[in-house]
Length: 528
Image (tube, rainbow, N blue to C red; front, side, top):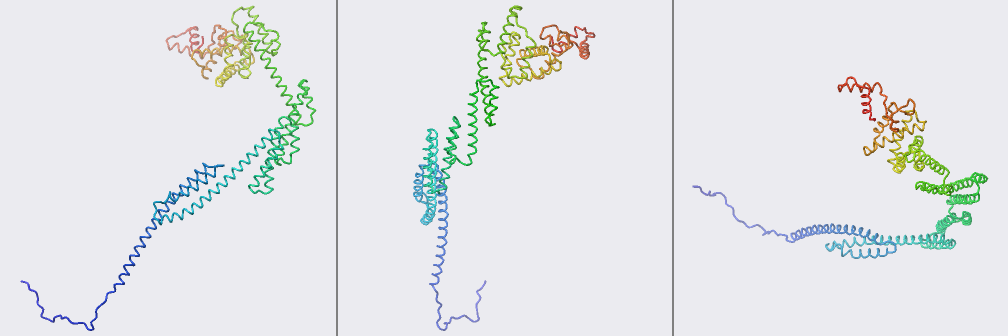
């Protein structure tokens, strides 16, 4: 079994140390080291707490600043003018309450830090408030003074006490100058602006009724009228004086014929005054003429109303009518008497020449046509054609319908030129009557007017050559038969005839007769 080895060599022994030395431990140094470590830990903790306080204080300060800016904007909007003192009072109260409103959750050190910031912010904010209040009060005072000056000017011009208004303007301006600390030069400049405004208002008032008085006033107060405004004032006064002279001159020669009045005006030396006088003469003459025409129109309306009722027109009414309308009325009465004597109660036929002239007027001068008294043509136009022209007059008031109607009429005018009848009123009237009748028939059949392409087909069909009494010359056309009701025998071209024969053969008719070809041609072209 194993054994514990035994030592047989030299053995260790215990001996006493010479001198009796015992090592000593320094406990004071250890305490100092521990204290220093604790101090360092305390400093770190304090710095962390201080940093947290600074962050919290900064956040409270930012909120306070934002809230004040919003409150300040609200108070400035709410309290203005005479109420601006309330703005200052509420601003002061807001800052007085700020320490208790903000920072209650801060530490003691944080509150101290916020108090320092608050003091600076409050001082700046309330200083700005005071400046705004002062500026607002100054603006309010300026507005009040300006309003007082304007009221004084208006009252002086309206009442006629211009001198009193001028004195009041000087006083009010001096009060403003004293408040603002103006120099004498500034005071005089501001007084000059207001006095110039006063004088200009008075000059304008006088110039409306008495240019001479306005000129006299201007001459007496010219020194107080702004230098830059003087040329314009003088120009206006010259124009007003010339205008009033023109009115007075025209009144003085009103009893003379217009030619003599203008001759008298030619002697006026001043060219501008002479031109205005002549213009006034012509204006007066035009007004007199317009009044005369209005009076004549009333007599004409009365006369035609009596004719429509079958009553006799008194001589006094006839005498008051316009000469042209009086002749028209007399012609109408004569034509009616002749028609009754020859045709009795038979309908009135359309006179192509009269019809063409009215349609041409409609094309070339729609506004003149709109004013034409169509009743005067009731013995020259059939009832159908007359109603159609009445419709055209009404359409002129409707821009869309009027534009469409004028386009149609210009198409008819083009066909006059193609037919070579543009110089013959009777032939133009016959063709126009046929075209308009076909267009109206189309509208009655479809409920609307034809399109431009459909209008072209209508006009093309009316120009088809054939045998009728059209114009008694070679320009024969289907249009004549539309108006007169005569039988129309078409003049079929060789090309059209060949096309029709080809169609008959396709249907098994090898040799169609002339009657068959004519009937097929009419159906092809849409004619009776």
